[in-house]
Amino acid sequence: MLIREFRLPDLKRVLEIEKMSFDDPYPPHILKDIYNLGAGFLVAQQNNIILGYIIFWIRFEDEGHIISLAVDKKYRRSQVGSELVDMAMDIFRKYGLKVIKLEVRAENKVARKFYKNKGFKEEKLISAYYEDAADAIIMSKILNNASFSYNTK
Ligand SMILES: CC(C)(COP(=O)(O)OP(=O)(O)OC[C@H]1O[C@@H](n2cnc3c(N)ncnc32)[C@H](O)[C@@H]1OP(=O)(O)O)[C@@H](O)C(=O)NCCC(=O)NCCS
Image (tube, rainbow, N blue to C red; front, top):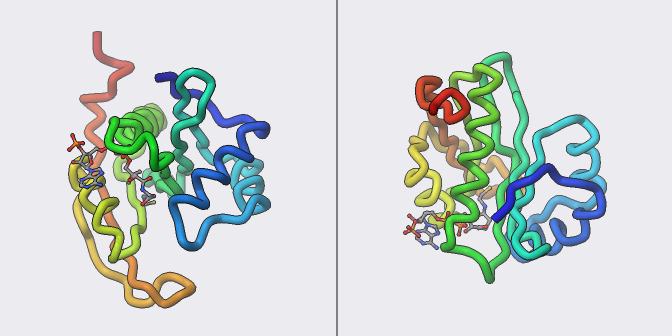
C-alpha cells in the first residue's frame, strides 16, 4: 500500500469514500478549500485504487488536529486507517508538535475504539457540537518525539 499526497484529480474518489462514511459529508468545495489552505491531505492507494484518506493541520503552534479520516467500507479492518494516522503522526512529530487532537461523534463507537487503539484518550464530551445537535468527544494523544520514525535507524 502506498501513502501519498492528495492531488485534485483524486477528489471524486475521496468524495465517494466521504459520502459512504459520513451522514454529513463535506461538500466538494469545502474539501477543495481545506486543500488549498495547505492542510495535510494524504491518500492510501493500492493497485491505483484509493482506499482511504486523512486530512489534518496544525491548529496551534504545538497542536495538530485531525480533520477527517475515512476508509472505503470494502477495505476496512485492513490497517489502512491505522497507517494513515501513523503517517500523519510522523509528520506532526517532524514539525515538533506535542499533542494531536480530534473530535469524534459520541455515537461513533467504531472510531472511538479505533482512536483508543492508536493511543488517544477521551478528554471530554461537548454537547450538541454538531449541526444536528449530536455530541462530540474530544480525543487527544501526546506525541512522543523520541519515537519519531524518521529518527530511528
Ligand atoms: C474509523 C476507520 C477510519 C477505521 O479504519 P480501518 O482502516 O478500518 O481501521 P484499522 O483496520 O486500521 O483498525 C485498527 C484497529 O481499530 C479497531 N477497529 C477498527 N474498526 C473497528 C470495528 N469496526 N470494530 C471494532 N474495532 C475496530 C481495532 O482495534 C483495529 O485493530 P484490529 O483490526 O487488529 O482488531 C473506518 O472505520 C472508517 O472509515 N469509518 C467511517 C468514518 C469515520 O468514522 N472516521 C473517523 C472519524 S473522523
